[in-house]
Length: 223
Image (tube, rainbow, N blue to C red):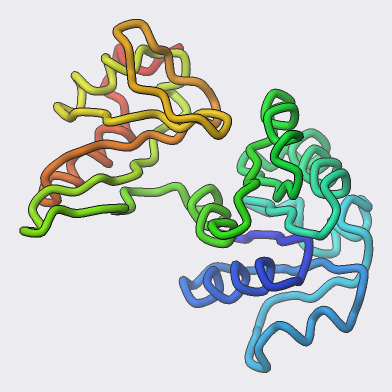
């Protein structure tokens, strides 16, 4: 994957290093050329000096071939504008914006831009939204057999009932994280864009569950 990151602060540089370590192509944009000092000396990605929502700057960073875009600068408005330009002007499907003011997060979510507002979890959550494949264990019982895990799902499931997702995968969904709130699934709860699904399951079955979530069977997840 090629991933463009706007903002080379602590979060931006951390996400860039992790993505590069995982074998991805990375481009980092920042208005201040001094910010690139936060990148390690062996960083092989592209460094672009400029405003992250400027089309020419984005083009230099390879936005036209980008699989994902992360806006993690120090400005809420700049982050949202850049994320919207990446999605609406360049067709990047996977975008995420860091928002410092949690009160704004819900507004931006409704604009279709996934946001991360909790500082302590920012880098981790950025990576999960940029690379939403498989399952990530968040808690396990003392025996190690049962885990609470965040599991990515195909966009094809959006609009489907959560109970149908449970039935297809044969798993118990513990809760849905939506706009900063945790929801216990009801019989009629429908999966919406930006929802984060958490399951309780045996660790040995996580790969199977992740596969069902990622690849809906014919006739399911078709809305």
